[in-house]
Length: 378
Image (cartoon, rainbow, N blue to C red; front, side, top):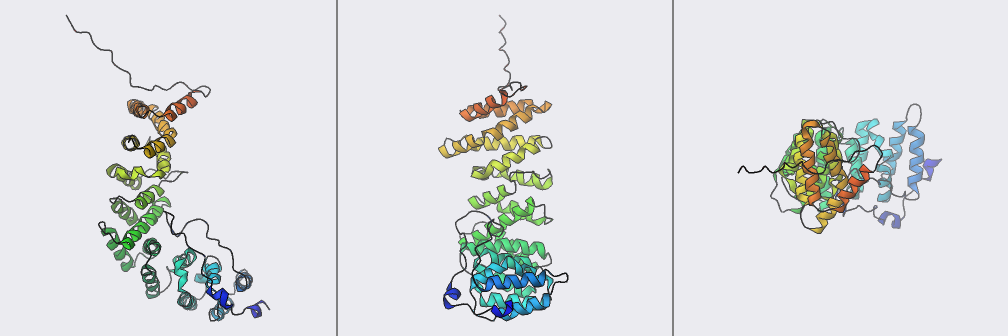
């Protein structure tokens, strides 16, 4: 009965654009939060109900489900309907008979190419490009790249890294990434945006501990360029929360911040500072050098940088205190204290006073012990 309720969309519905993408946010595109846009009225609810009934059976009826979708893609429909299904029901296409599923996806993208303009469509492509025919996947990726905006170009870079991960045998994907990573001196906005997309997805590979070792190398090479988006991508590898275990992979990325300290100017260094606290004991010298590099940046007289110093005073004080608890790093911790106090930030003193006001906490030394001057012999 429900199936008989499906009908052509009206002209107004067919002309309604997909829900807009966010082109102004600096960050990755594919895995942002907030994928659930409002569902369009009409056929969308009917198709979702039919899908739930057929796919939730003890033995899912993929054949009947595909038949319904194959019939519906021939109807006059609004792009928003397929946009709504892209992040939900259509993710199960990989479980169906794959030649039919691939043909259905080809028909959907051919009739509604604007799906490449929204994250739901990109998610659909990412979900299935591991098993789709290479020629079909490559044609969609190239179409995405050539759509002409920096948003599409960044999305292309992100998807290329995911393609290299899902299909390590795809030499075209890796060659295309290498071409983009190598273009460090480009002034082409589209290539720059694709490089940003590669950086964000490589950082995600590090954070999620995905075994795509080449992603680390791509990220380190991209970090040679001073751009806000690349700094943001690097710092996304060190979010707040449980830090990754210290490893050669982490050490290589921390080295990047020492070698290219301009990345430390970015507002998002809070997660890095939080993470460094966990690395003080396994790698105290690395953390000391990096903390001093951060203070070098924060010591700039520009007002906005000094505001960031104040915002991160608590993390820097915690680092100094932790270093003082390590017997052979006491002087390094005192040096950090002195440098923080030299910034003349009231927040540093406030953090110290708050710590020392807690019961049982002894006041921490704040300066290196000074040697008394020796008297000259007469």
